[in-house]
Image 1 (cartoon, rainbow, N blue to C red):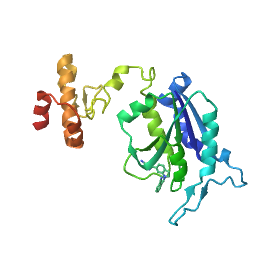
Image 2 (cartoon, protein in one colour; image 1 turned 120 degrees about the horizontal axis):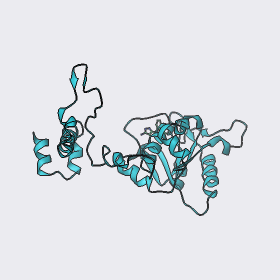
Image 3 (cartoon, helix red, strand yellow; image 1 turned 60 degrees about the vertical axis):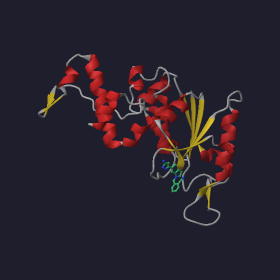
Image 4 (cartoon, rainbow, N blue to C red; image 1 turned 135 degrees about the horizontal axis):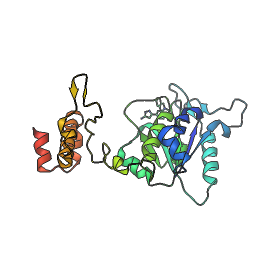
Length: 239
Ligand SMILES: N#Cc1ccccc1Cn1ccc2ccc(-c3cc(N)[nH]n3)cc21
């Protein structure tokens, strides 16, 4: 997969050079290129913003640099059509299934806005997806892009060593993941649940599902309406 990110703060995307995503890039499992939007400005001040039509606070990102940047980047591989993603607080919620959908693409371009956002005509002309990572307002699209690139990259083949761990992900089954434990068996007087040290894998799987059901019921009950529950699951949720 190729991922291009356009931003006025390229250094904000440096974390993509680290850890899981950085390792995936070094193994050529993903090719991530970051671009400074100001490279597509031509005035001495490299201006990317202007006052909003209709008045109001803040500034809006001008259409011309964005259109020039996207035309240039897309033209670099005429045989492929990228999926253009614009992070925005007004977007469709980003979910694990959305990450899986984006992970199926072979080329993503993330457009990181700043100020009060990108001129709506550019978004209309170019965006395939306008995505929100949560109901709060960030100062720009870079953090949302970091979140989405990590969530998508970890789903790419070969990136996560133990493929099972992404299958058992929180949300993969529609439930929140239950608690996890490691050594020591007792820490500060708190013991690891005995079942996890029993070696009875069927019982352990059942316990983990029950913990996931209980945690989901407590923290995100609305998720339970979206999944098929067995009679045993319903008994746990009702208890
Ligand atoms: N747009 C806008 C906007 C509107 C009002 C006030 C401040 C901003 C800042 N901003 C500019 C670009 C941009 C991109 C994404 C987010 C974003 C995403 C999520 N999920 N929260 N915030 C915010 C962004």
